[in-house]
Length: 428
Image (cartoon, rainbow, N blue to C red; front, side):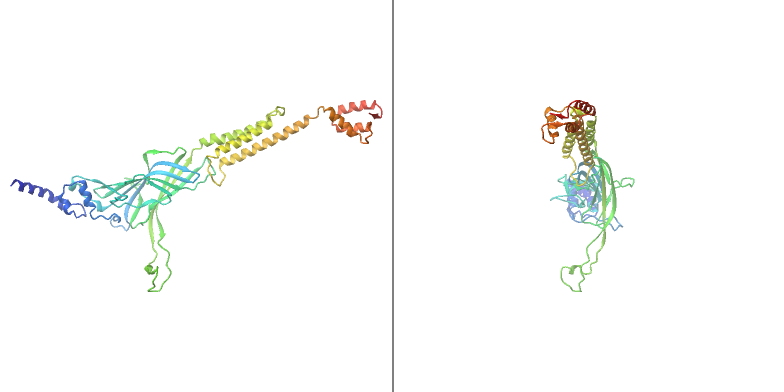
C-alpha cells in the first residue's frame, strides 16, 4: 500500500511537466526524466537541423535578425611595407532561435545552456559572417561555445585576429594618417535568410563598435576614429544564359525560364583611421639631417687659412648619407617620395653645394696668396725664356718683357726699371 501511494505521488508531480514541455518540442520519454541540463540539451537537439537558419521575425520578409558588434581588443600592427593592418577583436552576435526555447520551471530552473558551434562536434546553427577583405583570419577559440537562454535568444562572442590589406598614402610619412576600410557580412546568405544588422543599445542607438575593458593600444599608431555604415548591397545573381529553344538539352537546360534576380545582401562597412607617432622619426632622422645641413654652412665662416672648410663640407655630406642609410631600414618601401626622402634629397644637395663652394673659395684664396716670392730656379727660367734670339745676353727690352710676365707688383716693377736704366743696353 505504501509503494502504491509513493508511485501515485511521483506520477502526479511528473504529469504537469509532460503536458507543458518545451515550446514546439515533442518531449517523448524525456519528460519522465529528472529535469537537468543534459536531458534538456538532448530534448532541444532531438529534431534540430543546424544547417537551416532560424525563421525571421513574424510578419517580416527578411530572415533571422543577427545583431553584430565589433569589440576591438588590440590594434596589433600597421605594416607600411606590405600595406596591411592586423587587429584583434571580439565579434559579438545576438539572434533568436525559436527552436531553442523552453520553460525553466519545467527543467529544474535551468535558464541557460551552452552549445558547441564550430568543428566536428557542432550542435547549433551560427551565422557564416566574416570580413570579406581579410587575407588571414585566426580564430582564437578552438571550441567556440554559444550561450542559449530559455527565451531562445542566443549570444556568441567570436575572438578573431584579422589581417587585411590597407592601401596607404605615405607622402606625409612620418606625419601620415591612414584609413583602412573593410566589409563584414554573411558569406552566402541574403537578407531573406540572414538579416545582419549592427547591435542597438537600450535607447535604440546603433553601437556596432566597442572597446574591450583590456584594450591594448598600438605603440606606433593612435587609433583616431572608427566609423561604420550599414546598408543592403544588391548583386546580380547570375548572367543571362544564352537563348535556347524549348526542349533544348545541355548545361543551360536547368536554367530554362530562370530570370536573374536582385537580392539584397545586408553588409556593415567599417573604416579605421590611424595616425602615426612621429616623435621617433623626427628626433632620430629629420632633426639630425636638418642640423647636419646647417652645420655645412658654418664652413663659410671658417678661415681659409685653417684648411678646415673642405673637411667640414665632406664630413657633413657623409653624415647626411649615413643618417639616411640607417633610416632606410625603417622607411616604408614605396614607389612614392616620402617627406623624409624629400628632406634627405634637399639636405644632400645643400651639402654638395656647400662643399663645392668651399673648394672654389679655398682655391681662389690660394691663387691670390701665390703672389709672394718665387724660387730662384723659376726666376732663372723666366729670364732664359726671355732670350728670344738665343744670344746668351739680354737686351733691356727683353728684360722688361720678362719683368712683365713675372706679375710683380707695380712698385717693384718701377724700382727694377730704374735700376735697369743705370746699366748698359745689354745685360749678361
